Length: 182
Image (tube, rainbow, N blue to C red; front, side, top):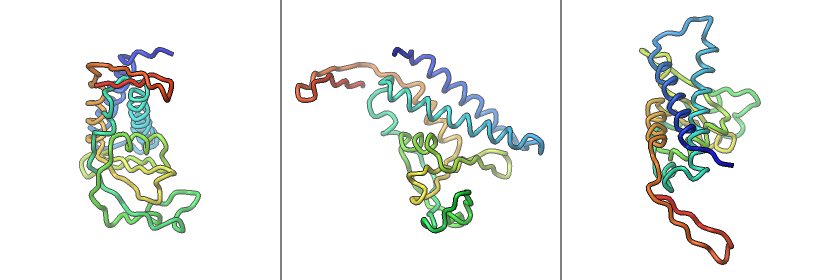
């Protein structure tokens, strides 16, 4: 299957543009709360999935997502006994004591794609400022809070990254070509 990265990159930029517009909102009308929260969360999923797809198709320099680090905060899990079928963040995580942490962009997009919790949050001045996320796999490791701006800026950089060279070496033992993109 041939996928031209130009179209993937344009879709990432489209979703980033829509997210940026939502980040400008100060208030959300009461009758539109679900619509706006769903919109920004879906845009986040699309950005994450398309960003990872660029990597998976070999359309980025090797290690692009793995070498990009995002600063964020992590809330410790209260352990498996606190988790229930219906998510209750206040019972499951220590929201009073955030810890500074970092994740690679690769890990962040995986968390969003496989999210157990994916919740947009806001601040005093804007309806949306951060994204709370953890996956089924990492839910006992903690709940992560990333600034939307940090996430979308990192993905914007990826959407603008192109490999400048491709090297191929045949691996006799594996009986396949190994490609390196820089």
